[in-house]
Length: 369
Image (cartoon, rainbow, N blue to C red):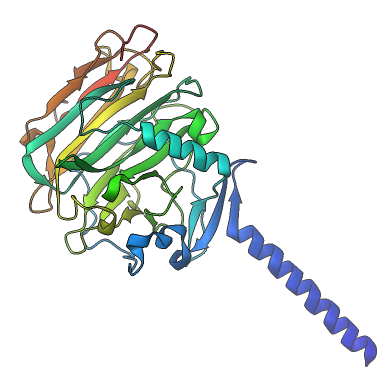
């Protein structure tokens, strides 16, 4: 009998250890020594500790239906790294002290799309204002790898925002190369917001963004290219029922990815709508004045496949419908034509939506501030 109980106890302990090890394997995903995602209980994710979200109830699904542009641009290769957390948990990038400190530094330097004055920043893109209110936008953007130094940043994004009485609220999402922030030279997806009391933050580094997808974090490195185009088709759209600002990745042949949202409680101006939307390529020069490459690092040419490009821009109108950008007056933005370029895209013969624009450039030490 003694032997029987010892055997049962041994089997129980082995099963417990195996269960613990299995649990550990499920609850974290290690892309490399520095990039680790933890699968956190969705109701215990760090963002819910934000003082403005004390009584926040998580919205699991947007109130609006999924939508697709009538004519989509297909990507030749898969662009996402999936984490695959268990149901009831969401992937949160593990923070380090260095990551948090770098994020705070870059949040202070981050380009504000609602102002003209931003030292060391150069932009190329388009925006719409004075025809709102708006409730969001979406755009297809090519994705590129760039050689960027640790004191520089280069990115492409869509954004929504408003300014009033020296206050600004805005949200951005897109792709970024920022070795100082991410501690590597890879191209990452990212999100950034600036809200009430001037608070702002990248990704999930500090409380704010509510992660809902169990498989796709807001910020994740893009796989290195094998061949063909890499691109991303992000959207920022306000939920008409809750006022929250959702970011959803539109995909041509697969189900759209509902990543999550920025709660309306974070903002003191854009709770109901915004008065500006845009899509831009942006660079932040180093303190020495040397500007990094933008887009794919080359000035746009007549051959669109050789250029960084934006297509299928849609704007969410006053009735919360995604409308073609041709319905709006788009203001072109290019603050330096020596180092960077911006060209109108060609309209395909059989498409109703314009290939909006090509952009980019090599940067250098004579781009000015």
